[in-house]
Amino acid sequence: MKKILYLTFVAFSFITACNTSEPKKESVETYKNSYLWGTVLQLNAKSDLKPYLDKGWSTPEATHIWSNGNNSIIRMHITPPKSERLELICNIAPFLFPSKGLTQQKVGISINGNPVGDFIIKTPMKLVVPFSKSLIANSNQIILDFSLPNATVGQDIGVAGEGRMLGLAFSSIAIKEL
Image 1 (cartoon, rainbow, N blue to C red):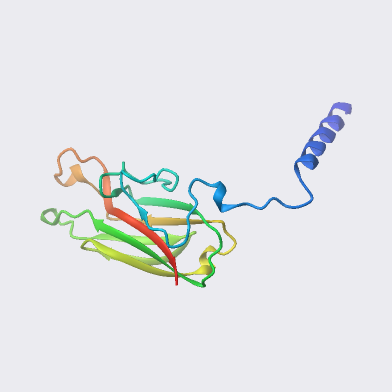
Image 2: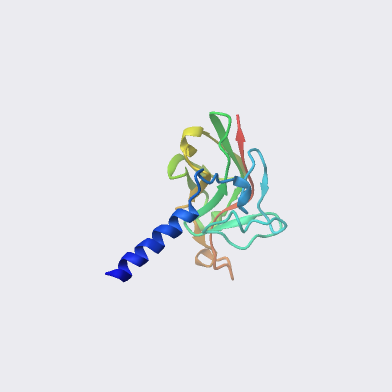
């Protein structure tokens, strides 16, 4: 019984010593994946993408990075935006193989778990997705989730040596305050 009381006292003393009278303020600058509103992130081999890429990405190439799988996620730590309206801007190109019937890619986009749109991509394009500040309220990060149900393994449709499950090639991404 003495050991339990002693350990409880030591644990309580440690927790009390670690807590200060003022709560610690978390600063976005303390993260490697900090994002400043309006910054265009170039998604290619010349950029340091590692802090932002969560899952579902291929190795960055000279001008872009491919999604790899049916789900790709980007995480960015943020400061609260001043504007109530924001927009996600993605420069993307679909993986297509028309002679094998792959003429489009579907993408569903969620922000912090909230769906913001489903899109059909048939050509390279700038995809602009408006969203409300309320989707990221009470959070110090943005989680961009790209659901790609048509992502296809290249080898399965005749692209020799292509074992990745490709959906979209991303060349840049930005989030702007409106």
